[in-house]
Length: 408
Image (cartoon, rainbow, N blue to C red; front, side, top):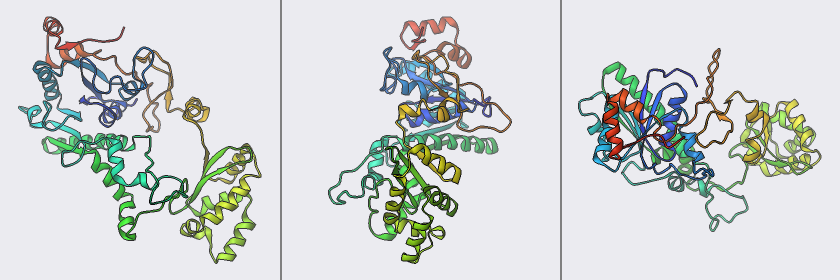
């Protein structure tokens, strides 16, 4: 936790991944993020995997360091309270539709400088989720073993909802850009970020989509090889798989040295008339010949010795781990300053909790803060933000319009 955004309050009305991610990143930099959910729990409140106590670990981690307000968002009175909170705050992140009760025009009545960032599916209003958007990008049809028949092979979906997380990060950036504009001009903004546009735009930003247009065809599947450069998974003598990436001349020389292949590579260069250190394209074009050399060399060493050689040479590599192994790895987690002591998680399960991914030189990040219990801050926020009295809040609770903490 840093305090770069201290003094900034944000209302978040979210579900699933992209929208909560935007609020999470702002909260980790010190913003006060007030998440509003339906009092029964939103669409993602019990998303798998849930603990024995019924707490979603996904919800718990996407909502760290936030405050929680629980309202009856199926009622007009509960919805009006949500709008009043948004209007009073002035900054909103949501993935509700533009014509929902959280429409920008409604929230901005009497508050023309209100800034809202809204995540959509597609730009034309169609619904979308990460997994359907990914199907449209073409990436799943470029993923898979090289030997698969290009005409009949199935698509391979990625299991990480990458477009959701990229969209969430982009929305946090878009919110701060709109706030900077407001500081300079006094103008509010309704910023709409379609999940589909983030995915399709990223394919163009990466140069992948223009490449297909230029070549007039789709890229072939190449398994775990790195497109356009030298890199792939290899297996050591004791059966450990590890990934090598040699995108630069320095990385290439270090890899050749670590594998003890300088004479073999020189012989192949003489045969082909190539200088592999000078051309990543040549390393890619002749990758199959090179992969054969490197795999044979890898089989001469157990992984511990191979890793030591790669480290001494300054090569870029990493062994494959299961996620369970990763989560217990001393270098990646246990001794990594990214992680702080486990806070009092609503699930009751103690595990490493990340701080902000960014670090600030000369500053120590505060310890991770827990996610709230659903409705934990309802009374506090309604009192501070709307000036409601204890009696008024009690009446709202009696009518089922608001709910307080579902925790102990």
